[in-house]
Image (tube, rainbow, N blue to C red):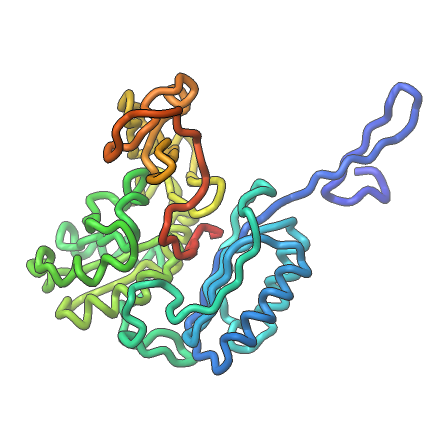
Length: 342
């Protein structure tokens, strides 16, 4: 590196002998959540908005009386400043920050809102939150401890997907149960349906993108008689960072930003299949019906051909659907939004 040139810059000499310096910006996304009582969520919202805006970040931040849930991205130095200042606030000092590589155009805008729940299960009074986090939830298992549990208990261990069913189409833990849910709000009805009652005496391992949804889901399950409930500490992100393609995770991870999916390792084969040709793909597109816009899987080849423009629920009339990163309605960053940064 030439003296005086920054670590994210490179230099070239043109034909006239003049030196030109080119910027090589490094973009990062961070995902984190903290369950902790907040006496004044609106004050925290105003602070977080001002902080993220001053750092030039975009993304989504949710604040509630029970804590914070955020996924934001920008240039690495700006993201580092945001993280440093956020963690200087005592209630957030133990936040587990999950980093990933961004593109520089991962979010359309900055959104910072106050909501009754950090994740929308429509059960705000179900959980008890103290300075130590959610009380009465599943036992946290780090990646190594999860493998130990599987080694000791074998096929008795049940992986239970805590995400929307659509997310699981492109990647999931091997042999996992995927509940029939379109949004997080569907989980209570799904669990209360009785279809999983035969698993109440089994070791249940809940998992989601970054861990936040399972903080609540594991409480809901324990309150309904599931005797032995666990949650993957740090979610799929921390597990896949540890084991990549050599562990129990198969396929791609759906994320709620313009990347749409991430892989942990080389030559990862997505579990999803193109709605037109059936080839493996992790790429979601929106239905061409402007009143629908439901996401479905379609490979790049079929997209380039303009094939299969509509989802299975819509009559095929109109223009081809475009490959779109826009999140589906009802998205809660976990993420997110839990999103990876989850």
